[in-house]
Image (tube, rainbow, N blue to C red; front, side, top):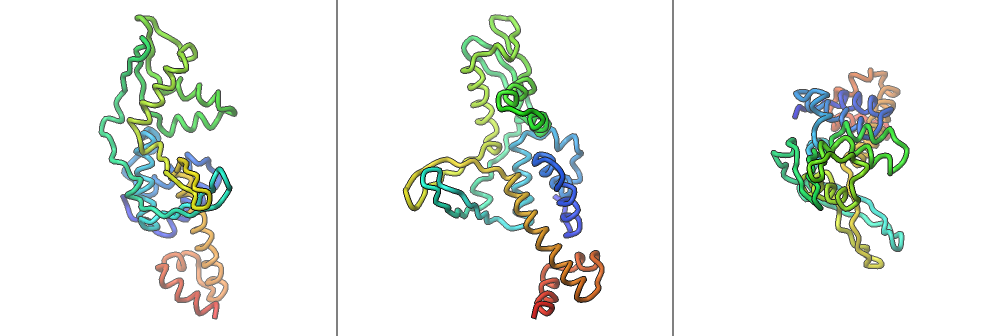
Length: 244
């Protein structure tokens, strides 16, 4: 992982502002993993991609995550603190290989989903269509008694088994937080998406930095590039004097 300057991160944020969430996380990762081509990033299993995003989050903002959730039973808002290590899963070196599964007489081969699959799913407008695209792309072969079976002929229990096997093989792609409401004691599993979480943090960070640039440029007539080249501590030092 390469170090990242304030200017480079702002440039990545600017490019990502007009992109989908899948493209945004890839744009951020490309900035700090220059050794990975766009094609390599696109083909990473989602869990491996999210593992890299967790490392990036720790590099930028530290290991502590502050998560806000709403109880689905009483609507109470709660804040949860956890560490990146709490949700970071060790990657399976076999994740890039096809998986084989035998269920209900069906012989199946499939691969784990990647960002290319998510981009195709983003282009459809219904859950049923998205699920169909998902299986058509990730299912490599399906046979029953030696005869090939189209995806749309597979029983629901077979599709559910494929999904469960994928989740077990790539747990980083399906992180759930075990939460309990302090008010009503309702417990539930809340999905955690590092891509949207990280983007929300970077978006808030970018707004703060650009506000600092505005104030310092207004006060001292400095160029944006010179202000961004300063450390965060030095920018704060000058801001304190501007705001006195």
